Length: 251
Image 1: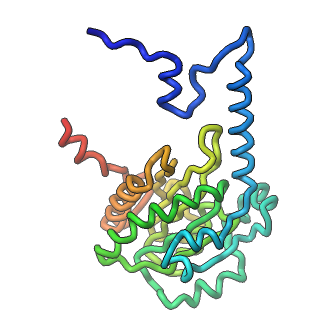
Image 2: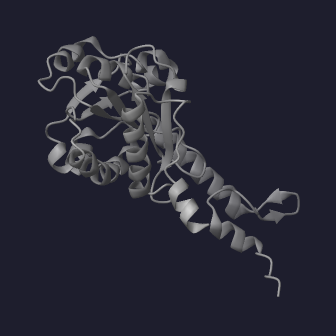
């Protein structure tokens, strides 16, 4: 017996994407128009909302109070949005604290960056809760946690270079969409230094309870980081094969 086709309301229950929109004559329904306007407003608010550092520090638990807090060269949100280059470079006033950090040459530095949605960083503690114990159990040496304001992904390269770490992980707020304003991205770079390109990074995106769950993101990152350290590289030459064993077992 063939299965009954999924009706339009059924489709919409499967995804936050805008599918199966209602119609009144040649126009969308009032409900769909209002939903679009609300999601657009949430996306705009997410871009402009400043990072609540105090709240984030509290959410991080024991790791929060020891975190280093730095700024990029973008002095405010308007500058950050119009000058991406400044968001990728460290404020010179933050350099001495990183240069004199007592933990030098660690295996990994973790940077929490506001990016284009500071709301997203509130998923970061859950990712670290699952990821950090695995790394410590494997003997990884971790640099102090860094919280970066007005930050682009590339700011992690300069932070990692100044800390002298082998690898940097940047957890950053992704550009909001009309179905998700709080997606967290994770960017992993081996041997970070100013001038690294995106082709030299690995990315795990859409980390959020309604997307890639923090626990699953942590498992993917753990696999990538373990392989990156073994092969001494990240980027296009390192493919995520963390799920192949499960796929093979299932088949």
